[in-house]
Length: 76
Image (cartoon, rainbow, N blue to C red; front, side, top):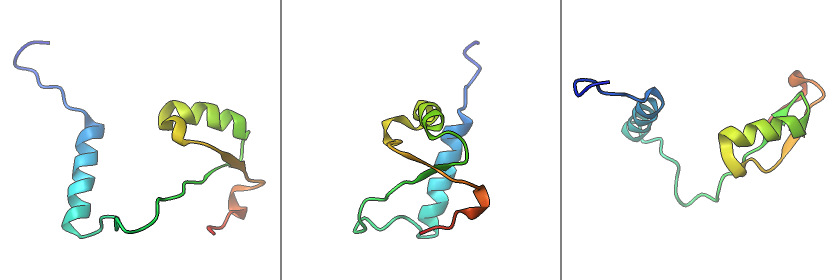
């Protein structure tokens, strides 16, 4: 590449910008809150979604729930 080339990760720079914006607006998550719960929903096969999802999200993707229709889901 050469000494005059700087590689920039767009993902890292985006994360930094989002963090700075959240801090500037005072929108950080309250540390006193309990740990968040993540729900993964799919209209496809849950096993397939979980297998592929773990490649991107890691072992934190513990369970996936199947929906009959995408329009039938409402947040709890």
